[in-house]
Amino acid sequence: MADIIEITDFEAPELDVYARLTERELWHPQHGDGLFIAESPVVIERALDAGYLPVSLLMEHRHVEGHAKHVIERCGNLPVYTSTLDVLTRLTGFQLTRGVLCAMVRKPLPTAEEVCASARRIVVLENVMNPTNIGAIFRSAAALGMDALLLTPACCDPLYRRSVRVSMGTVFQIPWTYIGSSPADWPEEGMHRLSNMGFATAAMALRDDSVSIDDPHLLGEKKLAVILGTEGDGLADTTIASCDYTVRIPMSHGVDSLNVAAASAVAFWVLSR
Figure 1 (cartoon, rainbow, N blue to C red):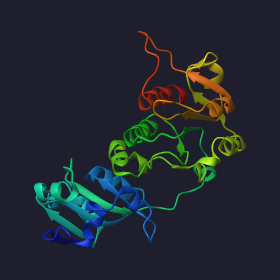
Figure 2: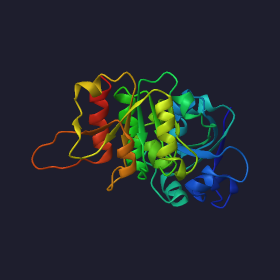
Figure 3: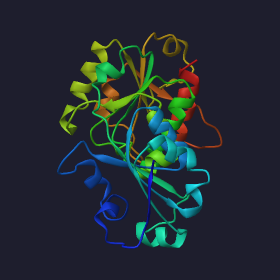
Figure 4: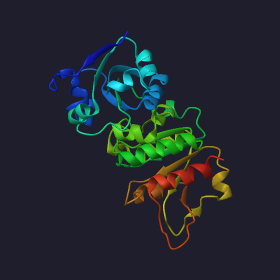
C-alpha cells in the first residue's frame, strides 16, 4: 500500500531528487546505482515494464485517484508525495506537463556487443548533445525498425528527464548503451568493435562521394550501423573516412540538410526495410 504524503516542507531531503539535484548529480550519486526521473503515467509504466525500480512518486492530488492510480498500484509500498499544481511548480521549478513524476533506479549498462548480439540494423550517435534530439531519435528508432542504439561517450544521457519525456518512454523499449567509456575510444576503437561485430558502417553526411540512401548495395547489407553526427557540425571527418559508405538523403527546393532527429527518421524508415 502506497504511503500518500502531503508536501508541507519544501526543504524535506526526500524531495531533493525532484527539486534540487541536477541531472548529473542524479546520474553520479555518492552512493548507489544512480537515479533518473520519469514523467507521465505512460512513460513510468514503460519503465516499470522494462524492469526499472521506482523509489518514490510526486504528483498532483487529483492524480492519486485519477490517471496515476494504476501506476501507484504497480509501484507498491512507496512514498507518494502530493500537492496542488502550483505548489509542485514552485517546488520543481517547472510546470509538470502530465502532473506525475517518478524517481527510478538506473540499471547497469550492457556492453555494445551484448546490445548488438542479435541486431541487424543499429544506430550509432556521435556526440549528439541535445536531449530533445536524443529523445526524438530513440522514438523514431523504436518505431521504424531499428534494433539497438549505441552512443559515443560525449552524447547526452538518454535518461535525462527531457530525453525520456520526448522519447515517450521508448528509451526503455529499445536496447542501448555507450560504445566506449571516454571520448578517446571513438572513432578508432569504436569502429573496430563495429567491424568485429560484422557491421558495415554508413555515415550520414553530405559529401561529393555520398550515395543515395536507397542505394541497392547499401540496402542489401546484412548488418548495417547507421552513424549520425552532432547538431550543426555533423560527423567528424575521421569518422566519415572510417565508414564503408557515406550516405545522403535526396532533398529538393535548395534545402541542403535536415535536423539530426528528422534525418534519422527518414534514414531508419528506408534502411530498416
